[in-house]
Image 1 (spheres, rainbow, N blue to C red):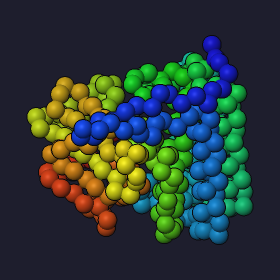
Image 2: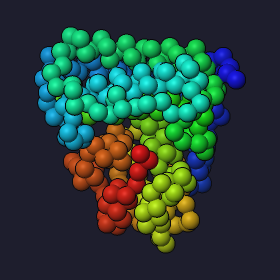
Image 3: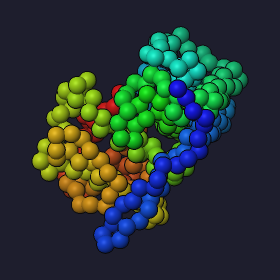
Image 4: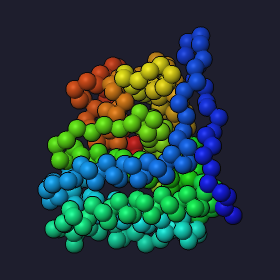
Amino acid sequence: MSRAPSCRDPARPRLSVGASTVTYMTLLSFDRRCSEIVAQTRLLRGSIEGADLTRPVPSCPGWSVGQLLRHLGGTHRWAEEIVRTRAPEALPDQHFRDLSRYVDEDPAELAPWLVEGAELLAGTLRAAGPDAELWTPVPDFGQIAGGRADFYARRFTHETAIHRADATLALGAEYTLDQEVALDAFDEWLALGSLPMHFEIHPWMRELLGPGRTLHFHATDTAPEAAAEWVVDLTGDAITWRRAHEKAAVAVRGPLTDLLLIIYKRRPARSAGVEILGDEKLLDFWLERVSFG
């Protein structure tokens, strides 16, 4: 049912740019994802040293920084149990959703607890291997490894990185993210947001589809070989996306991490250093309705 851990990368996909073809950075390996879960958590731990954990988190309304950390540590342990037990169905998740009892956190206790959960998850994932079969909240589709442990390795790499952004920005500090992690996070977000199941769960997402509706995101601070450009295509009967350099109804240009935070709705699209060209109403409409939660 499961295989030994693998560090293999999938074949590098190619992107056609004009008359030339370039190879772009591909998905993070399974082992890298396991490492990043811990690395991102340790960075988060460092950012809360001496911080006021009662400070509100604007990007997670109703939560304090301490509650955000309890949520993240709870999700790590939830995913770890799913992988360790090869759970065939969802496990209870109320413990990391109802955070009302966490009102006065001690950083000296919370910080090591947070890192411990990340290390437990990473260790269990490595022991299981990427192809261990288990329950996941979404099916196998395209880049999404539904039904396999690799889903949790990738999902919690980016869940942790984005919640680190939530805490860091709430505390008034600067947020940075490794380029390879940001590229994989952007790919994963678009892949999750284009799952066909969304039309069944959220029928209103069909409102996104329409003639001429395309969006282009272009990172301006990466090397050409990173191919950090994405096109979201809403013109057909499904949401699709691709890494591509193409004209679109609206283009959004800016630093890679800023673009990632914009699609995650952690930063306004109209931010310093970000340029919007074309149909701004389409961008607003897409950001308002797109979801994978």
